[in-house]
Length: 132
Length: 174
Image 1 (cartoon, rainbow over the protein chains, first blue to last red):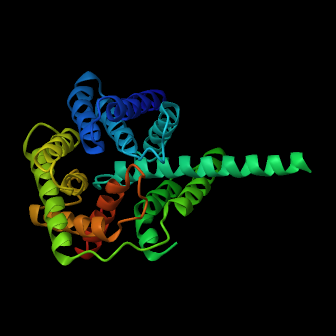
Image 2 (image 1 turned 180 degrees about the horizontal axis):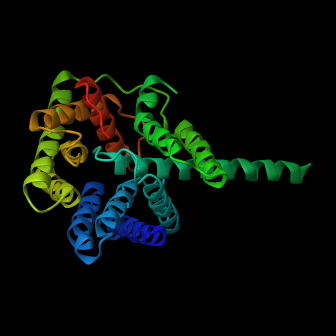
Image 3 (image 1 turned 90 degrees about the vertical axis):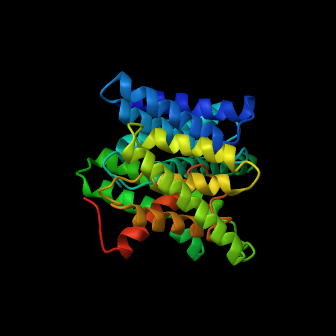
């Protein structure tokens, strides 16, 4: 289940990202189109379809991030994978509360931003110790 | 971090608290702790220091009504048609992006659509959904500049609005 959660999240996140970049869709259009597509098709395909549709929708919200925050497809894939992981871990949290998928998406983007910041700090530290 | 930033962390904090209520092994505990630490770093970078100009009451009212409209439309589609909440939010989002394309209200309406994804066990009637939608619109304008560019911020606002409405109504969810 975690595997399919990650796969569907990465696919949906990249679809949203590329939809905005290549098709020039607005963030709302791209996310809503993915939500509609996932919400209509995935529940028909398997018993876990409803859960996977929620994961795809969560990743589509993360794909609404600005270019300043997430600017390459690889970064988007990373953020989407985090969405899939968080949606899996938090599947029993905030049940029935509207906005919970958006909360998970925001958490994934913020964790990614924090990771990038931590990486930059580590590189600075490493560079400083090399100079000494 | 100012009070507006603190408000945005409420739903994630509730979710983390609920995760910690489940039996966690030490490995999962370390992973959750590490992710929480990275998230705190990300939050620190994503909160703009300066405050945005105060919004006019008219602008706030229009945004609140757009969000309430999105919430009600999604809730009705999700509960009274076979679409389900996810596809319903997609329909409302696409509709808002088309109908409100000449204004900035499509984003507010989409934020409201997330409120409408709530289950009837949480938001049990249309008036309650409308109130949560109105709260989302007010938050949308009040929290301008907080988590700008972070995907999921609209959903976070919707979750705050739903939780606040639940608290105000004296309810909860199981």
